[in-house]
Image (cartoon, rainbow, N blue to C red):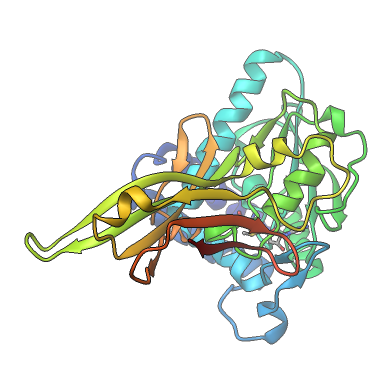
Length: 332
Ligand SMILES: C[S@@+](CC[C@H](N)C(=O)[O-])C[C@H]1O[C@@H](n2cnc3c(N)ncnc32)[C@H](O)[C@@H]1O
């Protein structure tokens, strides 16, 4: 365990993060200080050029992002703050519904700093909260273990698994109340959130809470008006809704190489002179807590120039093989 004064400083920073969850400037300051302590303890900065720290780790479907990028997630401020707020609130809600019970959390993809344990656990007692942790990247898992141990939080963790969440069978899955898996990138590109949910969701009870609850990819058509020098945007709606797509697969034993297609009819819009399509990712974390367009690296919007004349239809589908990505084709 780290010496007492460091533990005390970290605990103070964690409480001030909690108190300042609605004060982004103060919360960012606390996160930067926390990051400095985490680097000091784990020796993982997130910013070195060691190739082993940069390489993505292949999973059964998709890829887990490299160790350094996983470390840097802590400093995606709005993301981290919104997830912490959501997890804290979800735990309180479970406690309300199950007074006196230990709330059990399965954390799939903890990264080297396991922030959803290291920044949450000390706000509760060991009797109130118990985590099981899973991570595919051995070095990340080792670092998370070291940090959790150094912070005196080992008593909150029931087990650590070095495994792929896309295929993992959870021991006693019915005992968990909350599943956390922030394993996604903008446009759900390459990372494993979708196949992880496909594997893990059926193992949990129906009333378990999943964080993030859902991810949507929304389409807009845009153009730049020369008259008033403003961007015009026509919102079309979701072209991919993860939870809807997964429920449409029913009890399938394998996730298909392509998820169901979504067709968007462009004929009515063709006359309006739209120049681009814009795809945005919206992360529904929990309850009314969301990450919206450009609030985080997870929700960076992408604009793509449209070829004129506009085709009649765009067809979108989420592909899991050979690589995970949202695909689209134009049809007439
Ligand atoms: C975006 S990082 C988030 C890290 C940390 N939870 C945080 O919020 O800062 C995702 C983590 O999930 C892990 N991961 C991704 N896919 C995984 C899989 N299929 N099985 C287990 N871990 C996975 C990655 O290695 C990475 O450490």
